[in-house]
Length: 189
Figure (cartoon, rainbow, N blue to C red):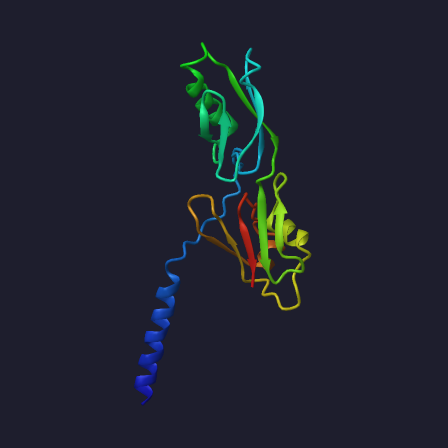
């Protein structure tokens, strides 16, 4: 009977471990990233010496903007320089040597989400470099039932994956801080 139980628990352990194997764990990367235009941002598109084509446009929820002569063009996910180059290519058949500049007037898309056992779960604007510790503070800190050493940052920057974080590591002198990126979700179990 004892051998059967041992075999049963061995199989159950293997199944549990294999069930968790599909989650990709990411390495913490705190390098500066160029700003990428997001949905709901507001842009100033300027075409040098052509006031008819220059305008302020919102990025729609589908990630596109509409510009005369070019039509609809994907803006979300591009840097302002990349979008200016795409607009320049679209205007070339209509305007001789167009010079296009894109300036982000309003940043409305950069948010992080904090959920789980925090005082005030929700979406928080990401202004500048915000660390995981700062985001938890914005959310009012942990509740009494929080597992502070089981925090997970879910990153949705195209690669996907999860970053497991222990609060005790964040506040230790040798601990590495985690800088959040737009779209990150912090889960406090």
